[in-house]
Figure 1 (tube, one colour):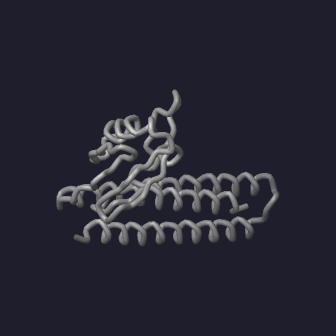
Figure 2 (tube, helix red, strand yellow):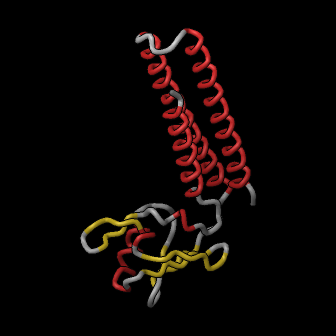
Figure 3 (cartoon, rainbow, N blue to C red):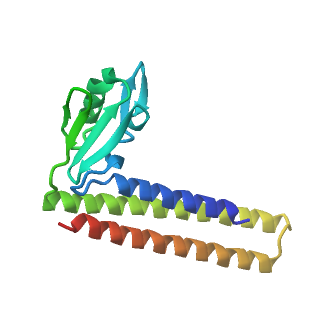
Amino acid sequence: MLEKTKTWIEKALHHLELEFSKLQAGRANPAMIEDIRVDSYGSLTPIKNVASINIMDSQTLSIQPWDRSQIHSIAKAITDAWVGLNPQTMADSVMIKVPQVTEERRKDLCKIAKKFSEEAKVSIRNSRQESLKDIKIAKDGKEITEDDVKSYETQLQKLVDDANKKIDESLKKKEEDIMKV
């Protein structure tokens, strides 16, 4: 009965981690750009599907497209994505120097991280509501007893509490990482 909720919670936590990985904290990270869509032969494709992204040093990313004709479209896509990065085209690659992050930008990134964690919590609350509806329907259909209802509700609340605790821990860790100079 609670398997669907467990799956939703896992998806919400996974999505939160993906969003956190995209937050730029002054260090080069391929996750910052890998999902930016590039016009590749008439269709929009993520950069990770048309090029390899390498970390040159803590401040520099190198993007090497598999087809050299894609270099300018990759640089344009990164510029158009408004992620605060300035790509430089080379003969066979695109280089991105990740700028140092100011204190103000760090605070903005913390706010964005809080927003992502709130969205994850809302998603988990919505999955709890769906499960509570399923439990009520099963009870009304006489598929489960009153004791089962209490048991499922207790297990469900424990799942939600554990997930919220994981979200709070992830947020705290990410904020510390962002504010680290």
